[in-house]
Image 1: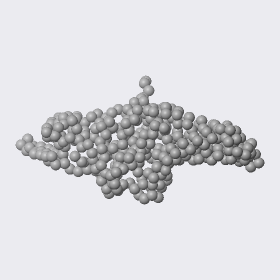
Image 2 (image 1 turned 90 degrees about the vertical axis):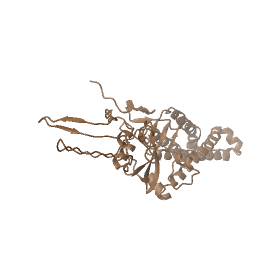
Image 3 (image 1 turned 180 degrees about the horizontal axis):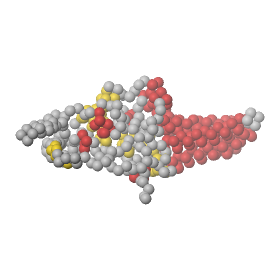
Image 4 (image 1 turned 90 degrees about the horizontal axis):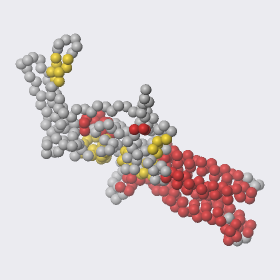
Length: 379
């Protein structure tokens, strides 16, 4: 008997999976090698040429051993954060098997001149009592939830999409943003630590030799590490400050760059303290996709053609029920009257082009999740 196919084996995105779907990476996961190298090499040089010499310089206080241990442990912590960021589902929204138009009664391929109603490209949903417009994703065949965007690199819709980071080889979204921020800020602190201890070692050498030039000549690795950390700190330190601003105002990088000059009121901003508490103290939701689960068969598509007449045979008698169901492309509710005798005919009338508001079940299908929003279509 053939083994069932797993979800990650048939996933339509550009992701790469390891350990049977337990780890999920972006298509540019090879860039992690560069990131690891940029962190690991300076730390190794620091431990060999600075921290090890400080063990002999500061034997009485045992401070040299503490510096060496802190450097190793903190680097391991940074690598754990890097792995947690790059190997975690960032908040991928499950794709639909079929477009929501097949349930909502729209037809995106039909023309308005033909008298049919095309599928709306956008909808408005209410968030905190304010309308927010969401778009329809042709690739994932769903209406994106608020703050969701489709990543062109990974080819997935990601909840609370922040950006795609090439340094970690993964999208940054709802489920891994916290790890990403801790990784960036911890890397900045590691740069400060290496820079400070290297400067301290140069100071001790200068006290022994008498001049700064002799100290530099005796430990050129310290100068190189200080220069490297100074340059790196402009990048990771500036990125940390930028994301602190984004967290305080409850924005994403995508929203900040796209709506920078709009001066629009953010419906997600709860105040600085509440925004920080929401990020650091809230529970991370589980992934909406079980990548290790077995692939389920696609649900059969609802028929697009109108059903005019259907005969249903009942096994315990010869009774035949005739059902008339006129499903117009314009959608709408039809009145179905069952015939009581051969002379009485029920009149079934459509409601023309007037469309009732979209119900909650239709919104749930369109989004694929997040049923707490109420919505109405925008044409």
